[in-house]
Amino acid sequence: MAGTFARIVLFVFVVVGIFSYVGQLVPQFEEHPPAKKVIGTATPGEELAAIGEELARGKGGCLVCHKVTERGNDRGPDLRQSTAKAATRKPGMSAEAYLVESLVDPDAYVVPDYPKMMPSALKPPANLTMAEVKAVVAYLQVLGGSEVTVKVAQEDLAAAKPGGPVHRGKTLLAQHGCLACHKVEGEGGELGPDITRSAAAREPAELLRKIIEPGIWTTPGYQAGIMPAELGRAVPEGDRHEMVAYLAGLAGKSYSATGAASPFSHEGMRLGLIVLVFNLGMLVAVATASRRRRRGEAP
Ligand code: HEC
Ligand code: HEC
Image (cartoon, rainbow, N blue to C red):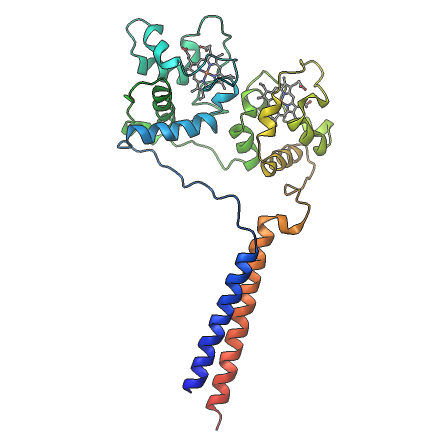
């Protein structure tokens, strides 16, 4: 009996060993979703600013129009100077209050020599919550070399966005700054054409190329050279496929979002392989153990 038990233990070790070995062979998953940082009323200033920076670069889409380093876009003012300028923009208004207002209600004060084109950060495409707006303001304060004075209040946390689930492709279009210029399903900017029906007239593969090579064709009635190539090239390939799959879907076409050349380049396949090996191993282990036990119980 003791011998059988030892053999089962040994067998389980071998199975686990094989499992780990296969796990080693298979390339690690590249995409680790960042731990979701939650903003609270007690979030320290630096942490709030760090979350704000991520929002400004990502979901907020701010860098589509603004620069925060030497290289960047000049559609809007350089954000490195905003905190210093904020104190002088509106007499009697604090720098902090002006920055919050600039994000929430950009047309309340339009910076001289710039067009009225900034969308409210609370509305699509950015769709930030009030707490997120405060985090971005904290980032602007740090960027401008000043102290973080902005505070997140309890009521800033309340406003969760209404509405049903949003297609991931649409979220990606917003996240990667496309909706700063494009409308899709009624939401977004007006600098570029509404892309809700783009896939009706074009093949999905053409749309995919347009994202990384905006010069390959120009939408009739629009000016070439406005859509930034570096923006699309910075979008991870998988996200580009998902955006196109979403646009294709809006036009009633189907398009595979994976676009993977080999099945092993797809995360799902790799995970599936590991799970398959593991399950097979467990199956064999259980079958062997019960056969042994039956044999052990037989007279
Ligand atoms: C579609 C382009 C666009 C996007 C996207 C955009 N802005 Fe702007 N922003 C502008 C323009 C143009 C101005 C100047 C005109 C005005 O005041 O509305 C401006 C003004 C500002 C100002 C006031 C600057 C000053 O010197 O007074 C701040 C602060 C600002 N933006 C921050 C942001 C942040 C943060 C985001 C992201 C949540 C953002 N903007 C997204 C175009 C944009
Ligand atoms: C700064 C503004 C701007 C941004 C940001 C932008 N585009 Fe564009 N886009 C345009 C303009 C303007 C046109 C029309 C002129 C042209 O074809 O180049 C256009 C054209 C297009 C078209 C062709 C539409 C049609 O039906 O002919 C597609 C598709 C498109 N953009 C997708 C994207 C995607 C995806 C992103 C995000 C990665 C993006 N754009 C970001 C301005 C922008």
